[in-house]
Length: 267
Image (cartoon, rainbow, N blue to C red):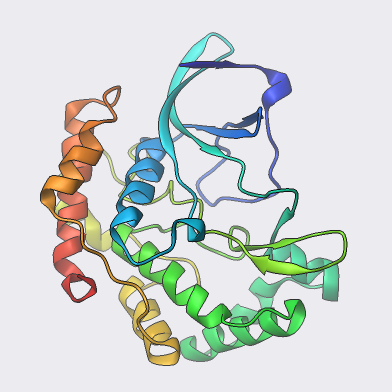
């Protein structure tokens, strides 16, 4: 358990459609307290299961479960090391507002065709930053989001890294806390069959279907991501988060295995 204070509170300049989660930074560690359910467990489990993929470890942020004491209350949550290495994390929405005076979100949603939305996003980011391969990067992100039902991916939390020379590089994949139906307060309450809730999860990137988003990305940029985890790997990972109730841990196992079944071609 870590005790954190007002001086540790971190404002990262990123919005979430899921509300204002408590975030802290101390000694090059970032902490996030659960707000709507088991976001910390989702962050941890997803990052651990990415070890069972062909992603390079530098391509995603690793999270660990952590209990956080703040203002007399104890919250379950997670922690991660600062991955910025002296660079600044800038969201695509802020990048476009700073550069052009308008947000990328407006560009995306004034484009009727969903495939054109992704192509425009990729082309505009590459043109603005000089980065290449952003389409493959987006496909990897959308694959992870689809497999783990991360419904809070949008231009306020897709980001790149920049420095004072206005150089850019890709950011590691991060911010998966809205995955695995972690919002138990509003959208996906405990006590209901999680398998029946899976179909209610909707993305916010450029359309409202995980499958459609992923199909479009794979058609445009290929299918670069594969996974190898099995039930035993999932259970071992989830069961290490001992301060979450067993019913919560079992629910996460059930959801992961259902999504593994639905996206079996990724394995």
